[in-house]
Length: 222
Length: 222
DNA sequence: CACATTAGTGAACAGCTGTACACAAGCGTG
DNA sequence: CACGCTTGTGTACAGCTGTTCACTAATGTG
Image 1 (tube, chains in turn blue, yellow, brown, cyan):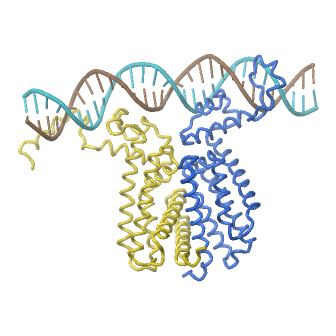
Image 2 (image 1 turned 135 degrees about the horizontal axis):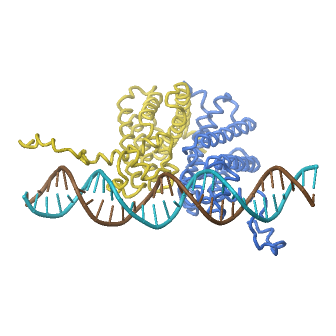
Image 3 (image 1 turned 180 degrees about the horizontal axis):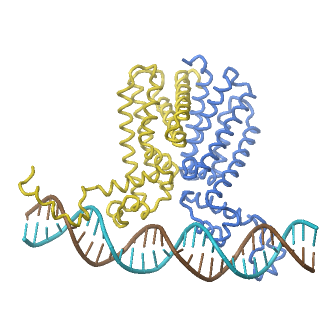
């Protein structure tokens, strides 16, 4: 990555101290955090020096962009939101007919989880992390995701018999189940296709079970 | 049992350096870890010195009982198993008739979660923690819990139409949903009765939805 | 061009960290 | 009693930690 500017003006780079595109260090620091998390470290155990070392930057640079570790975590949550939105957009574009809706959505989810492993690892960690702000941020992203899902389902008119509240609850449960499958997914090796397929099948069955419940919800309500 | 001369020799305890019942320091260390976790710290960020300080013990004592932090975590997972088993036993004893089964189980779960807050906090953290061994341990406890639940349901003959595999899947989903509600529960203040009741109601609805799905599962299967 | 602002650097400091080592007190067993 | 075993203690050390400070180079704005 980022090799587009190494050809034209490196002859004056005697010092090469700080000529980089703006915000690059910031991204390097956030990327370094994700890299370390991707290597199995927990975000809460990362230190500033360790982070800057991984990013190839001097420790003091950290404070130019973040007040402390929680601050960096919050900005990571914001980027996580972008990842989720990209995933939603792709799902909305790809789902063609209703009968394969669950399978295709789960597939898209799994492929995004594999492509953005570190991001989702960070999300799973943050749910029970030590910063309340990060926790709330992630929870809020999940709520947003669930409400968007509810909107889509309403638009597709597949669940007309459900009240808004019941639909929201159903989507909430769906998102939680998928999020939990996510932690399964992050627990197996990246290339263990067999295990990943098992998780895929289980997740699909979970969602089918939930939607069967939703289809019969009013009649089954006590 | 008591010989005749071991009763009058406690007056030489001038130093009182290390006369404590065996294993007390071990428990103090594990308790200190739980205390810190209960205060909002993440287990992965705890240090040995910090822990021994909290326990009121000298740092070197740590190594008498644990090889490292992961070792301590694993032993905490074992104790977590005991907590879960106690909870299951109480649930089995208290559930009288089938129609209140979900409500009563959720109530028991919530009361145990409040009573053993730090333990469940540790469990929620460990699910996405940095030690694979701890992660697997917790996952294994959850699987055991789910299979016990499946046994109970089979014994109560409430779900005779489900195959063993489908019942296991249903119970797995139930346990996951409850575990996720747990993280909600741990996120609110201990005495915020209103929020806790909201979580209680939502969890009950989740489980009802799942069981409605299970009741119609075969017919809804594609 | 002059200027304030921004983003980078290196040196420094006090304090904390994990771990090793040698020692002491009490225990159970012979 | 003497012995080894376990548990707890104090000291020590090298290395890492977060954070402050003063300095410098490049950038954008007038």
